[in-house]
Length: 175
Image 1 (cartoon, one colour):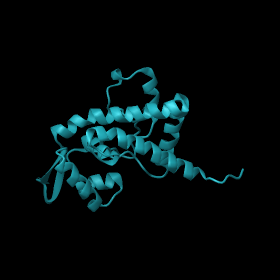
Image 2 (cartoon, helix red, strand yellow):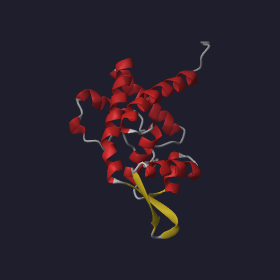
Image 3 (cartoon, rainbow, N blue to C red):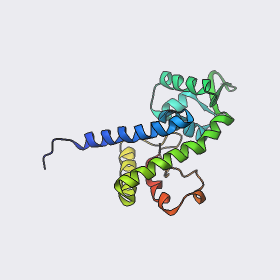
């Protein structure tokens, strides 16, 4: 079957549109999507060095330094000298940064619900499973988790606060 558009085009365009919805939602708490992901990963990794965060996100240490500097200036994380390695810094969430995690997770669940509203709950669950398989097959994993860990998104969020329909979205990719 020949088509004018490739699967890649649809995947990239959809990802851009979803990220734009997330960006608008996170504006309420003055965060960008990648900043939210860094805070979420740091919550699992802390204390963490900038180098370990950069590796987890597959970015250069310089790029992560720019990101962490902005998060420090916003009061969401702190940087301190690593007592075991004076040439290294350790990053930790501040109380303010930790306080944003619930709002970040709420925003992610709202985007999950938006996806399900657009394509249906069953297709949304399938999409989550397929995109995770693709990510894993390409050698990726959720930042802050080892590649060998089998996880579902939002696993650290209290399930008692979700209704049955939202539980279907646990198979969506980690952010």
